[in-house]
Length: 292
Image 1 (cartoon, one colour):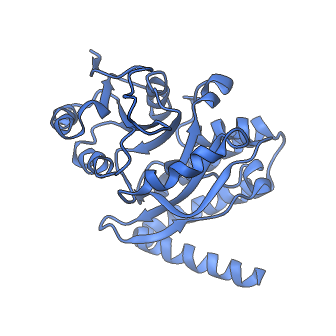
Image 2 (cartoon, one colour):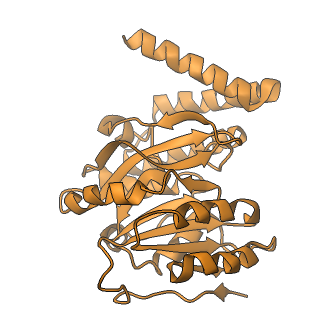
């Protein structure tokens, strides 16, 4: 059974609210332990023209009861739909059809907005982006389960590496103009890990994004679908699919990345996430030293 909360529609925005309007879409499934922290971080933000749409996959763990409780704090800013879906991309697609914002940001139920001023600081960049830029992104902080920052995803725009499917923009820090969905359609729900990468490639193979340096948009806890070590080979195999789809042929770099993903799994079984990150930091340090 589908459960749908009340949602505002285009034209319902109060005249006194500033523009642009930002839609924050949160995918969830049995995320009752974390979604309250995610939505509370949004509730603390100082930019008033936000809407939050939770695309829930039919949770049975009390998530909906928590959403009902959070509605008292967030008011009409919060709405949700709860019904079975085939994964994160399918959940996102359902929520996009309900979004009323000019710009759309996608978060996971385990993510948090980095600070209460994130949106008020990002808005000037969104206002000046059009018509040249329809993708605007900042930084994302990868944190451990205690909230300590492990590293910042702060790579500047590198078109050759992005267009060869070697690295993606951190979706928790990416603002998508709503016109992209009219032009390029929906996310490919057959992709478990890199549906956001595939969608951005449709536009950014020929266009440019606007990078906003030094602005951390969101915090993501290690262990999410895209960072869990045991899921690494799945993600790389999907990247290889993207290369075949958007570029064509075989990528030697991505084939090597698949080999590294299996090494990560071996390291994880030996020493857990700690060893994986230690070796990763050492590898990045050696790589940067070799480029100096």
